[in-house]
Image (tube, rainbow, N blue to C red):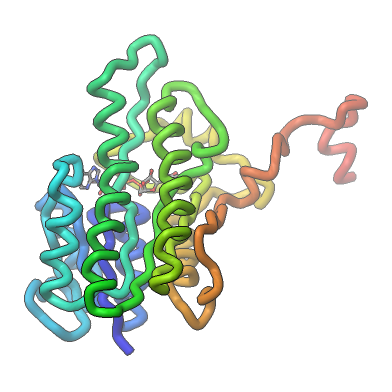
Length: 268
Ligand SMILES: NC(=O)c1ccc[n+]([C@@H]2O[C@H](COP(=O)([O-])OP(=O)(O)OC[C@H]3O[C@@H](n4cnc5c(N)ncnc54)[C@H](O)[C@@H]3O)[C@@H](O)[C@H]2O)c1
């Protein structure tokens, strides 16, 4: 049966890949982003194209700036009016690079509002709609390996993703009795062509290595989201963070052995 899936940050990157994956399964998808032009271009690449008022499977867009305090609830209410929401994927996020000594309140707020407050408030709004009519949607938050590992220039980002992982657990704990599951996918470095979150080639080369030996693709993340959203597959999974990162979070895999043996020696 077709589901109604709402994906934030769906104009590019991981969010768009998630939207495409659900659409490919025959689900109705609502793509949310603050960049109207990019959103229109994105929805044209999603199966079915834009059908803003369709009640059957298809793709619709909602332009919203999730930094605004009322935007998450408004997005959920507008999408719910079109059709009750079965899946909410909070993928919108910003990861600016700001040296520690340059941090200020505005930088902190900008990251926190999009990366933490918006997913929390969207989850609250969805839970209110759903519990009022006895429905049991599921929520998947996109966090990051940065939730566990700080990196230069990313203190607000790492902190926001660590907070979002706790939001995931806290909301799962409180909404479980209503049958609402809340989980997270924590990507490692994934190659995206983002206008909002530019990444230099040097950074990409430095951050890419992982035990599985290839960079992540947005579709790697989307597959995990689809699994967590399917109660037939993951119906007893809630409050978890699924790390989809080629093994990046396992440890310092590029170090030599402590006795000085090189990695080449080990694999020879
Ligand atoms: N690419 C990676 O390596 C990586 C790794 C770990 C986590 N993530 C997370 O994945 C998610 C998607 O990031 P991405 O890498 O695909 O980048 P991206 O820039 O392609 O996607 C982020 C989207 O969020 C939207 N967005 C940003 N601020 C918004 C706002 N105020 N209101 C509405 N929409 C807004 C952007 O317009 C953009 O379309 C983010 O939460 C990011 O933190 C990415």
